[in-house]
Image 1: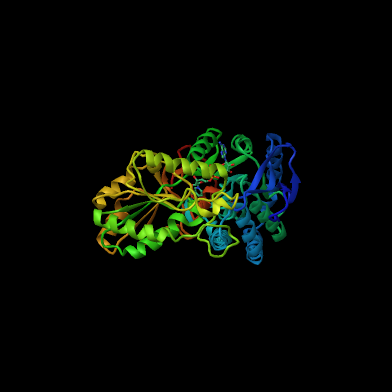
Image 2 (image 1 turned 90 degrees about the vertical axis):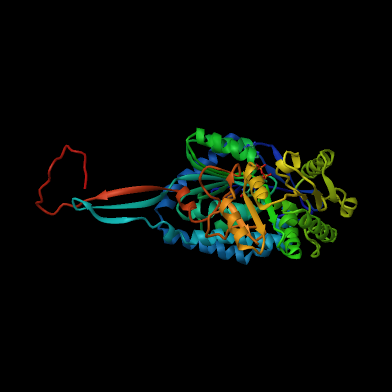
Length: 504
Ligand code: NAD
């Protein structure tokens, strides 16, 4: 485990052991709340990744051969250990990501939903069976694991996303290689220890740390059957294109630019309270964070901005160790500078600054990567801050005259992860849910992340490939279907040869 004061040299997790990196090349891991370096994570070479893949491949036949019930026993034990060690896991998440304790707890709880789904593997793996499809032949189908599958995760959910993209993969019988974000490797390494303690056989679970070179080896290596990626849109596009070129099954989830439409009949107090957490929670570093609020009508907009300005000015930013804070720092100094750049340029493009979070008080007394909440009014399509995903607490108000205009705006954007409407009008809500071109949709729900037993994925350039981050359809992604036609001859029965194409 990492503490606040030591700088630990991390390793990879291969064959159920932490192994030292061989490249001699490391990346610093920060505590974003203090700005201090807390660990150095090794950046794997191509050869190290190749070795990890070979280990995972050799573990696959025995893991596949184990009954699904026995595999799930290990997953259940893993779940139990996660719950028992929740406090340690929360500490690690908070230290390396800067999240608040409550937020880290929420992330773990949502991550456990994916583990729960994996515990359902015996049910999810059930195939079809038909008796006598013709000539006393019975037909059945079975879902079988793929082999070695790779998961590549982003920094913003150090535990939830790795769990979401690996738990079911393990339970259905694959060997899994996780390449976590080099910004938050400690959480993934801690999960590895829990898998080992739960009894997962050597080689079934691997964590390889690294950057794009490690990812490229996973994309190109013929022994890797599938890639499940979650991260920014540009990288997701690259992963999908490259992985597909090398003949792999790929799901690549990208960024989001999520909108909250506010109808004139909505209760603005409720709307504002919902917006605060959904927009600024986790310093807005969530793929489902609301980045743009779209009030319908001038009066709604004027009243809403007034209520928001008052509430936003009372938000508290600070380290996770302070139980009063609403959100913590952003992940790096570079990220902080990039967000300030977006705000500055939006002002040059004509935005109105309602709340300015560029220089929060805490930043004067700390080297942490803090930004306060910023709200920009009169944002218009075409402005950089409207078009780009800004992964930090700079949020937009876009004013429209009608629900139709709001729907058209949302549908025209290239990203389509999440969207929500706040209204008391059922007909407006129905029109919105029917016509909106986005993967995850809310009605009076600020962050419409589906529960673990529903499928999670955006549309448009928020997702490349047909898979999901979690949910029951994920079982299709991590298995292939074998369909068997089977006949048994009775003793002395006649066998005939036919040259016609077989039919029923
Ligand atoms: P990122 O794309 O920079 O990194 C994601 C992973 O890809 C990391 O493991 C990283 O090491 C690797 N990577 C980075 N550049 C690469 C390259 N050029 N080639 C190969 N691999 C590369 O994303 P991030 O900054 O860690 O995470 C934030 C992003 O993730 C945001 O855009 C957010 O919206 C998105 N996200 C999306 C979802 C979703 O469900 N759609 C969920 C969480 C986060």
